[in-house]
Length: 126
Image (spheres, rainbow, N blue to C red):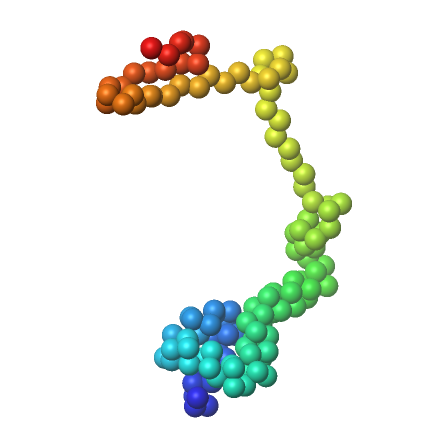
């Protein structure tokens, strides 16, 4: 593995690429990357850390924005992280006067002779 290939892999991992995508970006086979990681276990740890860079940068940016007083970002963050601030919605389905919803099932039956006829739950079989 050349230094240029390692640089291309690390660039791809910084962008959040998967192993297969990063291998393609570095113009190597994914099995080459796997073998390199097997021989260099410390690189496997580095690779997984680099893959988290976008999330780490996003958290840093969000923190800076909230620290500067951006209430929209603060609200967004609280809605996703604190159950007390999460908007709640429920859907309740009821029939007339709050009763159950009536459902009528209709289906087509195909008898062994190949003919087709409609069947209702309310009608008897032919």
